[in-house]
Image (cartoon, rainbow, N blue to C red; front, side):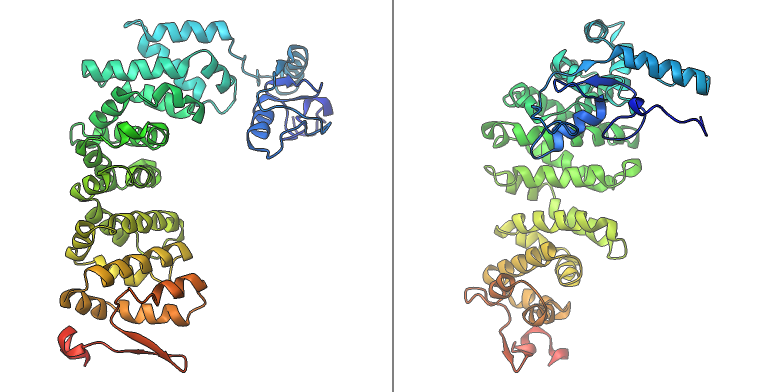
Length: 413
């Protein structure tokens, strides 16, 4: 089509690309379905981009079949191929969803739904998938697989539910304890790398599910659930990159303040795995900054109790990671690192802990916080009288560290 001028009315007013699925809004303007959906779902004050008239987020969108046929004819004439896929109808979707309940058809039906839910051509409105009952069909299928202990096709159903997930599904999963049990089962499935993609998909769904699950269920989460989530950290993401790793940390952050979950997470060796993960990430790769921030936020939660602090101090690299990341990653990491060190100094300041803080340079870093261009509240937290760091004062801008070095580390005296 190089050199051919595309008719202006074939172009979406938002994306300025040829429309694949033109739909007309109640304001009379035609847009590409994907573009107007994205606009309405993300705009602070949704309205028609062209007319500026109010346009509700759930506004009806009418397929513009005439314009679609014109675009198709023009593309066929100028490119020689069928560039526009045929939109999927509600009747076809309902037929495919019925196929999920038929044993001999469920695999093919799931393949079809997965292709539609993850299609980049946007030949199907994901909102239509939800309206046709795809989320409920997937939850029912997932729970059925769990009850029958059948792993076949389960990953497809989990991926579909992930692809069409919206916060509006709260009523569907809020009190569905069986769905949590299924995710627990999947996360602890056989220790074989061939099941890593299945587990990665499960933890991505778990991240969304725990946000809307009732607190009464979250408080009763099985320790096996956390062992499975911590197991995701050991995989390091694989082909999925760091996405499952981040999801696993976010799951633990979300539920750590409910009931005794904090202790269940600690018992699952989460602190050990978090420190190992941070040591593996290092400081050389800035794209891992978000992961480091999540790690430190979770460590701060877990170190608010004695068991968590004891586990961190028991790891040979625990204190070193805190000192090494302080003032080197982001304000979020600085805040959480100071918080953790404050908890240790206030509640677990044994001679061994003090010696370790001096050895790895944590004391020096804390003094640097008082002189660095940090937030005022962070400096105040560092100077809080209840926090018993190895004592430090400022004298003419120089940090003077007063510790019993003979007890802490004779070599540093």
